[in-house]
Amino acid sequence: MPLLIICGRPGSGKTKRAQEIANYIQTNFQKECIIVNEENSKIIRNEGYKDPNNEKQTRGFLRSSVEKYVQSHIVIFDSMNYIKGFRYEIFCLARAAKTTYCVLYCNSPYEVCVEYNKQREDQFSIELFEDLFKRMEVPNQLNKWDSPYFEVRYNEPTPLEEISETLLVMKNKSKDPVATKQEKLHEGNFVHEQDKRIQEIFEHISKNQLDDIQNRNGVMKFPGSQCTIRMYKPLSQIEIKKLRLEFLNLIRVNPINNINLVHDALINFLQGQLDRLQ
Image 1 (tube, rainbow, N blue to C red):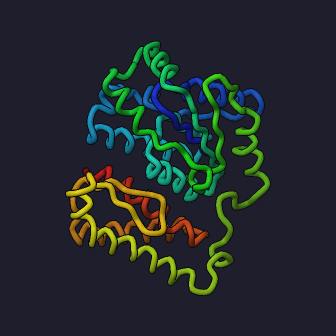
Image 2 (cartoon, rainbow, N blue to C red):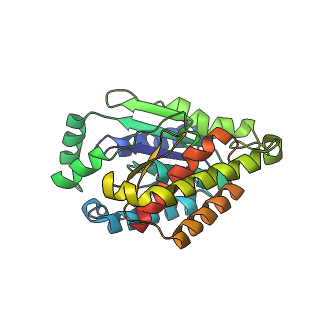
Image 3 (cartoon, helix red, strand yellow):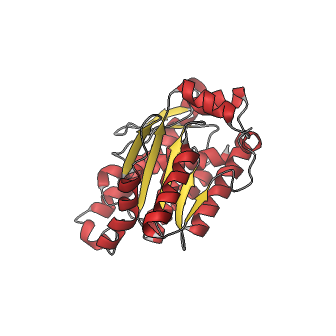
C-alpha cells in the first residue's frame, strides 16, 4: 500500500500535516491511513533520542512498524527522518512492497520550530532540540529515494490533492509504479560496471579510513560523488566484506536502474549501517 514519508526538524509541524493528509484521504478516498510516529508508538522523545544507542533502537522500531503496516495499509511515516541513509532504507521498503512512495519535507525556520517544541507536551529538551535541529540532512529531489518530492514552508498549506494523487491515483496508472523490469534496464556491461564501482568504494574505505578518522574527524569523501560518510571507528576486513554482501543482496532485490546512482546509493546505505554500528 502507498507510503508517505514526512521529514523535517523537530517542531516543524510534521504531525499536523500528517493528520491533515490522513483526514483528506479518509474523506475523499474513503481509505484509512496508519500514522507511524513516536507518539503513536508510545516512545518518549527525550528518551528515544537521548543517545546514539537509544536513537538506533527508536529508528529500528519505527522502521519495523512501517514495514509491518505497508503490506496492508496506507502508511504516513511521521518522524524527523533526518538521515538520508535511513530514508533510503524506507524507500527500499516501498520498492520491496511494489507500491507508490513520496516525500514531504516540512521546511520551518528555527524560531518557529522552537515555539512549536515549547507548545508540545512531550517536548525535546533544549540541548537535544539544538542537536537534532543541526543534524537535518535536507532531502534532494534529484535522489530517487527523495522523489516524488514535496516541500512546504511553515506558512504554506499542505498540498493535499497533489500528495493524494501521487500516492493513490498514480498507482492505478501503472502495474509497476516503482521500477520497470530489470532486464530492460541492464544493457551491455552494466552489471560489470556496477560491481566495479562498488568495489572502488570499499577499497577507498580500506585504504583511507584510518587517516580520515585521525585527521578529518572521521569525514570521508569519495571520488565521483558529492556524498560523504562519517566514520566512527575503523572497520575490520570482515565488517567490510559483510557490508558489501548486505548491499549486494539489497540491490539484488531492489536493483539500481541508473549506473550514475550506484556511488550515492552505496554511500547512503553505508552511513545508515555505520550509524547502527557506532
